[in-house]
Every structure is written in structure tokens, then in C-alpha cells.
Length: 299
Image (cartoon, rainbow, N blue to C red; front, side, top):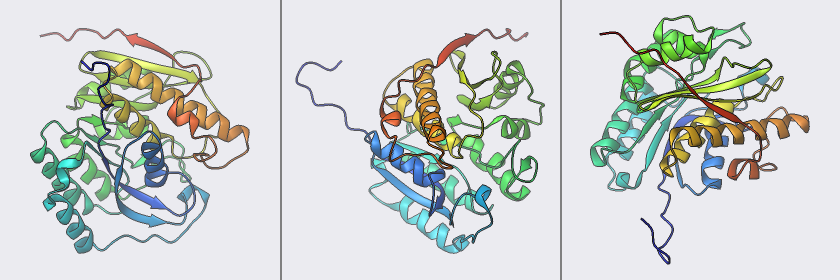
């Protein structure tokens, strides 16, 4: 226990492996800003460079050559500085071959410090994409995430479409989501945009080692992209601070809800990280949380 006069514990760097955009706050750009704003240094390994979120229109995609990406990942894995890392987050992959390099890097971090958490955000599809819903990455990439990265993760953060795709289950209700999450072998599964109990509401559902909890708030029409990336990073950061699952989820959900609400109110088509950064640090939005009773499994 800390005593009076002890220095505040330092937040360790977080390694973020995901896409990079020039305009907007999705993926690595917004996530890195949020983590740095709350005190984490960020190591950022981009998997692809895009001008903006694909939902804003077609644009050039620059994916690093496999050999180059593998070499950078190997450099990081072999660095004597890798022990500084306090957590790893992976998200969007530019191509399927990157999964093996990411896995090797995660394994190197865990070999150096076995307790280092790895969060896999299996960014692969949703119910509302421009194509009408479904996978928006090649099947080979989705398979690589499912087969190589998800099994390594301490925390997985799928949306409801991704959860259904990963598990082969239909997810239409909260109980569907919880049952599907429990079929994964990860310590914690955070289902974003999960079905809510209240009307005109949305939930984030966490299936953890000490039970299941949902954080619920009012739904906001046409939210900007990037909420999944943000809640994953904030939940991880809150957990690293020592908060229990319910409080970590509730605070992360409140920050995302407030940032979305403020951005939409100003008519923005992207999350306004710079203007509304206080929402990331300490949100005032009302989010309710509740424990979910799970049926006991039969022997």
C-alpha cells in the first residue's frame, strides 16, 4: 500500500499495433492520443496507412511490404527496451501475413514479462458497413486474427458481428452475446455495442473471470467511427490502474459516450479528441452498470 509521500506509480508504455490515418481519430491516431493524454507513452507500429476512414470514401491504401513489417516487428522483439512495455494492443491488420509478426512480437513481450496483458481488438467487420454489413477485410485476414491472435489474447474486444463470426453463433440478445463470449478461451471478452436491456440504449458487455457485467447508456444516432478502438484502450488502461472490471468498464464507457455526444452535438464527422479531451480524462456522463446472472454450467 502506498504511504504519504510515496511517488505516484509511473504508467508503463503501451504498444499499439493497428492502422494509421492522416485525417480523423480512428485506430492508432485517436487511440494513441487518448492513451498519451492519460499518461501512457505509446509505441506505435502502423499496419497500414490510409488518408481517412474508408467510410468517408475510397482512398489510397499503403501496406508495408511483408518483409519490411516482419523486420520491424523482429527489431522490436529483439530490443533490450522491450521490457519497458506494460501492455500490447493490436487492431486492424493491413494483410493476413502481419498476424504472425504481431504474434511473435506479443510472445516476445510476454517472455520478457509474463504478466504483460495483450488486448486483441479483432477489427474485421460489422453490421453497418457500406457494403451492408459483414466482413470488410479479406477472409484470410479474418482467419489469421481468429486463429493466431485471438488465442494469445488476455482481453478480446469484438463487436457483436465480430463475436458472432469468431464463434459461429447468432448474437441477437444480451444472453446470446454472453453465451458466445464464454465459448472463447480468453480471460476477458468485452463485447462492444452489445444489445441493451433498455430501449434506445446501447451496452458494452464484459465476460470476465469473476462474472459478467454490462455498462449501458443512451444510444446516439450516427456516431463517428473509432469508438471500438477507444473503449478497448481505455478499458485496458483502467485495468492497468488496478480498477476492478465493473469500474474499469463503466469509466471507459462513460468517456466514449461523452466524447461521442459532444462530437455529434458539434456536427463533427470524427471524434473531437483535441477539443473534448477532458472526456477521455474524466467523463461526467451518466452510465449505468449491472451484474448479469449467468446460468451455472452442468457437469
